[in-house]
Length: 412
Image (cartoon, helix red, strand yellow):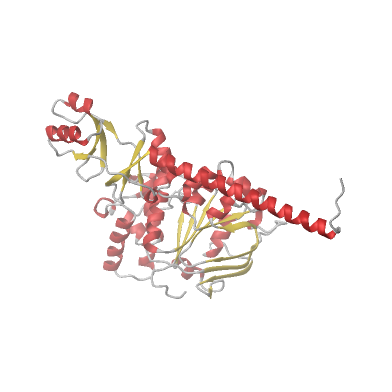
């Protein structure tokens, strides 16, 4: 495969087909698709529709029965599949890490196989752990069993990126983790893509996930027939048919909250103190802030607790038992839907926004989010009115044309 200098590569699927012996119908039938370099394309469709089979044919984990695959213009259908897989990153559900290898050994596996030096591998492992938000010193020597599900998935993504491939294939990579961790992993992938510009093909059965991360979405019917291949906005506002509408479901306007990021709305500053500040200084800061609560940060600048005046009165010289723990946060890459869900679970009506290391960067409140919801609903209402007006106009034009065709005569 050609060198791509760290960036994504285009992918072309031409008449791609997979037949299994003894099956009357092909599992994947004559798929044609062009994916641009640096684009995130999501395959979404019902279980058994062939989306994972199509994905796995791109790196020939499943051999095509017919058709062609081109990566950056090069036909990879006939080259050594092992060589191909070393140039295409692959991340799966539950990470698929080797349990007898440390985190560093898992990440360094492909670079080691293709002959990188030890020093280069070591530097790459450190770089990637930092990139996916894991402290290299803390995680380098751990084994997969010592990691949480979310940490394992981060290591899985790091391993897929280890040899700096232009293409990254992801087969329901976040499907086995809890919803909050899943949201954070999605945000992390979006942030990584802003830095790396890889070509990512991502399989999911979750349409909301597809909307959130995809530049374009391929809605697939059975045998991977393409029902619609378009941007999330286009699919939400103009689904091609009833099958696609079934995936969009009810509440398209609210689903569009998945298209707007926290970084696109106003993030407000909030008064903060740290665990190292004297209690009297914290009290003075709260009193002068004009708010009824203040955010306590830990020694690394990460949100730790919300403190109210009554908490400080009861603290008696120690903050150990004072205040309310910060249970949920969002990043700037989180969607407004993520932020709204976090705010609704916290009856105080706001959520803390954090950076890539979990450090505090600001707060988004309910008023800001509700204004955004109203703007989306109003935009949808105006769009629907325009569509109705256009439809009525075309009907009027058609009626006039019919009347002129009849010599202007009308019948009661």
